[in-house]
Image 1 (cartoon, one colour):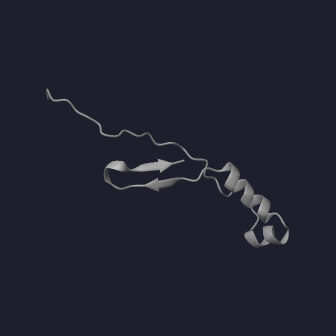
Image 2 (cartoon, helix red, strand yellow):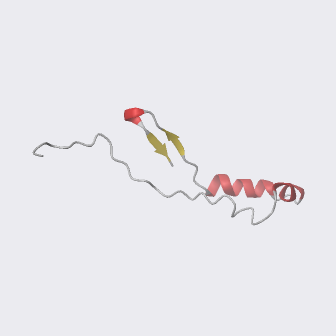
Image 3 (cartoon, one colour):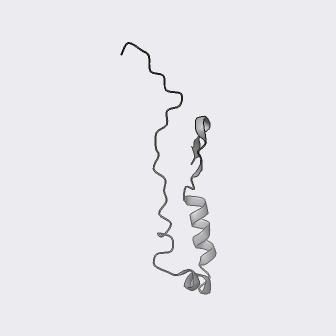
Length: 65
């Protein structure tokens, strides 16, 4: 058609580093806690992994990475 198409918001998906099993490397939470490594594993997840916080509601949706 001869009409102009306007995009209100245009977003691109980003890949997040969400491999949470890698820091545990096969160890169960109980085993990691007993060996004293659980705190270090959780620190790795919180400092090196990306957590996605999404808000989807009409015109002002966003995802914080």
